Image 1 (cartoon, rainbow, N blue to C red):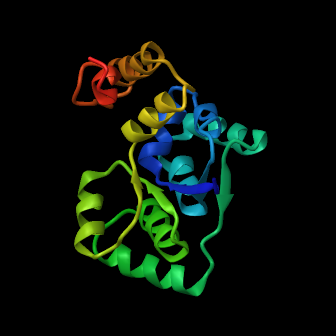
Image 2 (tube, rainbow, N blue to C red; image 1 turned 180 degrees about the vertical axis):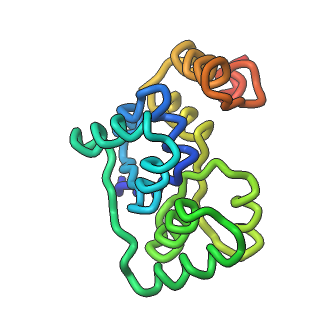
Length: 171
């Protein structure tokens, strides 16, 4: 099976950074998670507490950073910023679209704009990544539910279900 490269926007990345679990992303078989320099800049600017964890993930090789310098990606980035998306989202979308890679994004408004603009991207969310981790036996349902509880109680990230067992169809 070939490797699936996932360009990660700030929202999904931060969900794993706040609980200090970017290691989970590196443990997902056949997946490699990459952030753009713009996403790193957003983390630096908006989430200084998470920057140390992101840099540790880079140092450990569990995350990779790429620069957006390709002319087509820069042009697409500019077009996306004109429709009101953030720089991290725009860079992640531009790279994913141009290189035909998967995109991890959590902003529902941005997702609507991506779809209405006609982008045909494989989309991941924090929830779908956790489901993949469960399906590949990287996490148990109890461990996934503990992550969900941590996000909800301490980090204002809510998922609209009681247990990941529901997402697996095991309840």
